[in-house]
Amino acid sequence: MPEKKEDKRKLYFIGIVPPSPVFEEALKIKQYVYAQYGSKGALKSPPHITLHMPFKWDELKEEKLVDLLNEFVSECPIKPFALRLKSFDCFEPRVIFIAVEKSESLLVLQQELNRFCKTNLNLFNATYKEHAYHPHLTVAFRDLKKPDFYKAWSEFKDKPFEGNFLVNEFVLLKHNGQVWEKFISFPLK
Image (tube, rainbow, N blue to C red):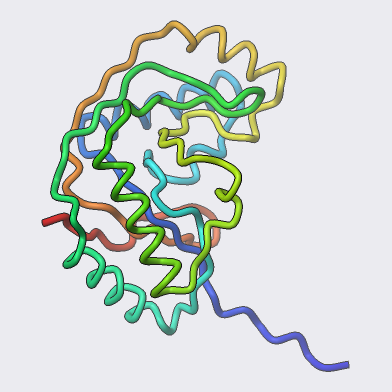
């Protein structure tokens, strides 16, 4: 029987990581949800809004990935834009998140980035085929048990939250085997 070849690919994803103080406010909520309701999945990544779902990429070809994303940024029609986070919402019965107010710039950035990734990186967001892009910042992840979800949701559904920030970059995040870390930022020009 032939030896199984080791997969040298690493996991990456692309998102928007909010700056201070929104970053710290969102992180504090994620930590609270873990302490009160046991959902630690959201703590495995920094607070973020996903632009491209996780994908595998050969770590030895990381430089090519970065070069191609720099190429995307240089051609990107989207300039820095304001984004507003307002209140909480959920994907019942497991996920609670901070809602992102509708933004044409964000939608265009996500669509253009995904088109670029599909064409130039041969990456596909297969699971997004049936669903429209729904930007959000997760504070309670799918590891939240159903009874705890309903308790947490009753606490968060009417709780206010507001955060405004300038989106002037997106980030390539890399999984280190345990958690997601910011790997490299790509400034919007």
